[in-house]
Image 1 (cartoon, helix red, strand yellow):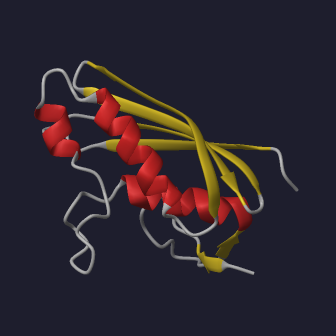
Image 2 (cartoon, rainbow, N blue to C red; image 1 turned 90 degrees about the horizontal axis):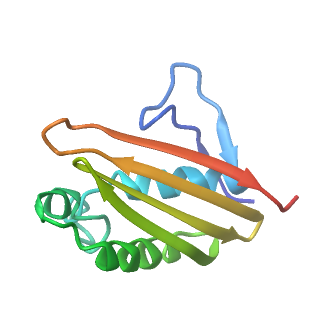
Length: 130
């Protein structure tokens, strides 16, 4: 069984607990979304060039969808990535995807705001599986 420390947002909470199953995969996806391209020195291809995409008018939605599909597909526990959507409005890029894991389905959506605002928000919804 795969497990990891539960993160509250992107921080380890004062009272630690473990996360497994679909919750673990969703956490890994949120961490991947919050990783900027080049941030991981041992593999600079991990992550997303959010600042570049947000400064490009209009943002390259086809490239964003392709990168989301590829990045999510590399996460341990993910077996398939489908229904990848991307949109941009008012300095915010929104992405969503349906992810099949070895323990059920996960629907992920995220909104990444302007780098000037330095904010990112994530939500994860779960359904299916056991």
